[in-house]
Image (cartoon, rainbow, N blue to C red):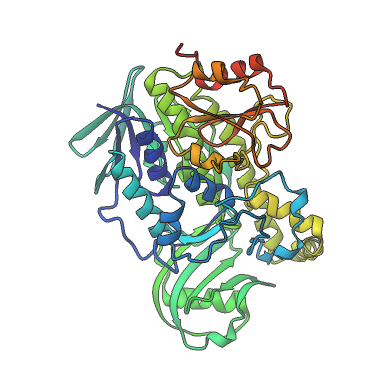
Length: 502
């Protein structure tokens, strides 16, 4: 019997497997597809943008450089000086100008190796994570389709064909049409679609008829990317084109002509898929000993490129909590804080994509709103607001602390000896950084020695802090003033790391 069985070997399932393996759990990953590679995962169809928060997660586990190498990124800043983002994303196809971002208005960040987002592809992400999972002793079995889930108070069992895989916990990371979600009886609620979207790789006889970039039109939207023949389009038909239908060349050409207002010709279609903006979310992320993460827990349109980042955030939040529960030193209710903290983030992403769909509708009311949004994005405040949201820097969990850093992703604090917070987090434990002259928290921190690292010394920029406690997922659990409150630190440590061992 394994500690955890993960269903789905996409980026979310693999990242979660790495987190659990790093913590010493026995992990089995079951994947329906027999082969890891697919043209839908490689460039250009598999292109994805990782937010700064996701890049930081790879950095804190020592996987940033392998990720950059696999992604073909050789000019990543990784500087010790603050750098303005080179890209800023878009809202409803309306591009943000990085020059308009007010860096001083963003939540505090310190310069470090994980300075900004990265363009990558699913193949690169999964390759890096699969290799790390193998090193950590995670077993991945491919070509295994789960058909039944059973559980009691002690274990959960995933059945695939004639085989049963028992574990203390089962986690569904098996995508938007999650088998685990349905078999385990999770509630799934939300809104029905307004449009059908298409992703197409084709030979275009007259590509010059399509303007580059995002194009909002009176009949929909189309995107012509720099990759030859790679186009996307949206048609507001109420999601009428069922994904179970095969999108033919004739159908795709007709849609592209309608939304572009041109007589463009698709000579041949190599790959094509459709999607909608259906936005649904599991009412809870836990049912007994079965949990959900990534698209299994929430589905939405790809507008704003939030899906992969949202799922990686789920995995980073859940991994250490589930591992502590498996090992028996988690405080009561720790695993339930996963739903409490991540469900609101998922709900926000669903609303963010709904708002974009509403703005993109080809009707006079939505087009009037488009004009208003364009004006707002032309301002410094408007661009900064949207960038803060889509970069992940606005996320703050309600942990009850008064300090503005509590609940936020920790800045990459650096001691004067050069040691960075990110360096200290590679083992997957919490970190207590003590900047006080008398090493005030040393004795207290030793009680959680197997669950957190203690490091002390003056910092290059301590942000006015005397000490800080960071959870394994990089979230600030407690922040102390110049003279840290030992009792406050111990309360926070007990809340997230359980009773001290000594």
